[in-house]
Amino acid sequence: MFNAAVKALEQMFSRPFRAILVKAAGLAIMVLLVASMALFRSLQWLSGAGLDWLEAMMGPAAHGPLAVFGWIVALVLSIGLGAGAVLLVPAATALVAGFFADDIALLVERRYYPHHPPGFPLPPWQAMVQGARTALLTIAVYLIAAPFFLFAGLGWPLYFLVTAWLLGNEYFDFAAMRFQGPAEARVLRRLYAGRVFAAGLFIAGFVTIPILNLATPLFGTALMVHVLKSLNHRARIAPVSQ
Image 1 (tube, one colour):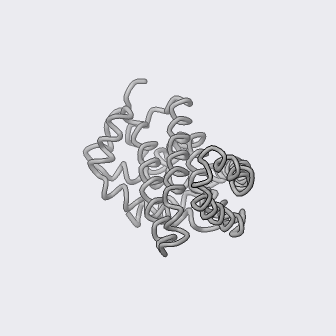
Image 2 (cartoon, rainbow, N blue to C red; image 1 turned 45 degrees about the vertical axis):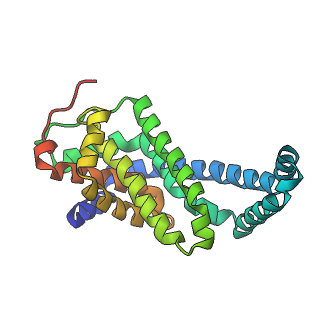
Image 3 (cartoon, helix red, strand yellow; image 1 turned 180 degrees about the vertical axis):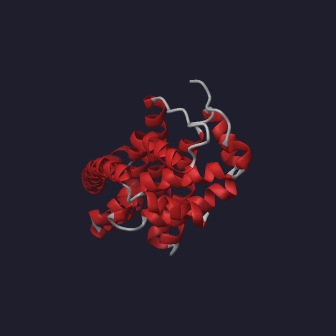
């Protein structure tokens, strides 16, 4: 696993990867700006007019619980937009990965596995759906886990583990679906769940590094190509026809 991570990091500084990095980082920044503003506006509405609307809908008995909820929302707003942006980075990079995963995987295969059958590029719509699904799932899981971030003292450890699971699954699926169908890729992922999660821990560590985390699609995809290739009895199968 360490060897795979080192190879992924080394290739990130190659010229072809740098060209992809510029495009991936620019798109990730745009997604983050839009998502952060939407989050801020939503919380701002909830802390004001939204609470009044909810109380009118639920009745006077809901005033106390809604007041507590409003205090929580105000606290989240006071933490600032920057903290929200940090939590949105995994979702943003997951969405961006759908645009570049095939290009990255092909570069890894050509450099390190030239004698293996190359993967079959995913249809653009399938790659986009995969990235969007993971991004939405990431946001949903973080919203559910928000109380733990604020009150239970489990914030960053929980964030790290959840990120490792979510992004490990996504990037492995991107690599595996170049050789087999989505259903077969998920079966393979479950079969090697421990190794996928271990690789996901490296991706989670990478995505927590400011600025560098904009390159997560490159590192995550490259790492999972190496992980897939290490599964010897599956690594050399011919790409499926699509």
